[in-house]
Length: 433
Ligand code: SF4
Image 1: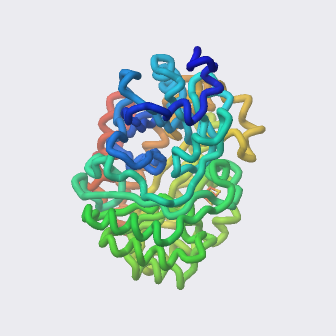
Image 2: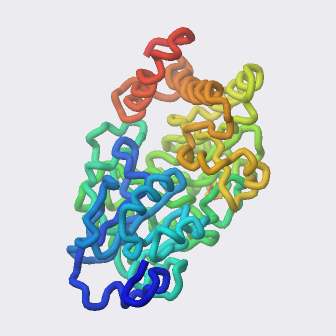
Image 3: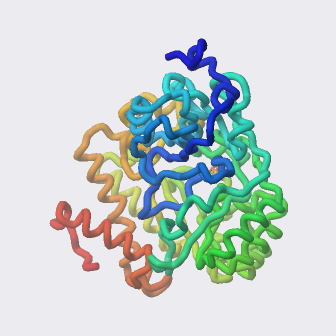
């Protein structure tokens, strides 16, 4: 393809912008935003200022003549959708970034003018760099384009959050220096990069006027930052109940007490795979005890490695062990994820023979794609749900944790799954909703 007398690979920033009227700049995410579970997409951080900039919720086709740039954030499971869409559009106008282009830039060479690796908040400076693959530039001159996204589209599953409660999110840092063997966060940003606090303050001032009832701090591990207390006090001024991610090794009584005093409602601690010892979880039991003491809800995300639960006996042993941990730690919320091996993590070498290109679309943590047998895969999907359902509807949960059936987003989501799975698995259903 020609661009003037150049091939499209040689096109520069000036070629793209010189002499053009300000046509549309369109931000998109692949896969598209999930309006049942999603939050503000991170591509809003990348989109530049200007009234010609928009965020498209659906990845529809556009008329290339009206568009100056397409800014596409692509996650693994959105790769096929992106390729199909890109083939129908002018690749001289396509910029890609996000997890998949960062890790596999070569997979985008034929589909995009620029491939951005790592975090980025200055799009124009980033793409002005020579070459097709460029490092994202972050200079914190602006806040994310929250104005392009209707806050009503945000949904999050949070115990006690009602569907119409206004929920928003903020990101105050990126990356994690820890190296949990399965985690892809350090691949996107291997060192902790903190937003300047005046930038956080500007974001908080913007979010405050939306009167959120809930705010999710999207940082991978919030208390990693030296000044997390000041940042928490800023975010508290939104008036919203705060939910954040942290690792247990960074918490102690003094910190938990401070968090409780400053509106932290729930902390997500990664329980991860219960058959593996993670040093970050050495003090998990003590931290959960302290969270109970100070009234902060505990959210435990856990990992199920499908290759470890093949067969009835192995499955029973695993889920019995998991239930024992739930009873010991009494979390208000639990969430299961199937192991997803990411290239670049420590576990990759062990698992890459089980991953093929067709599995990309299943990188949603809810599909046991390491299992090739479809029947076994679907059963595993069911048992992941079923064991969480048993916990939420147990006498233990009702007596020792909280009431489950209160029409909040947690209860409603599990009822949705219940109704979805019931027709197929009714024969083993022995619990009423
Ligand atoms: S502490 Fe959390 S974010 Fe950091 S590497 Fe481990 S799992 Fe990933």
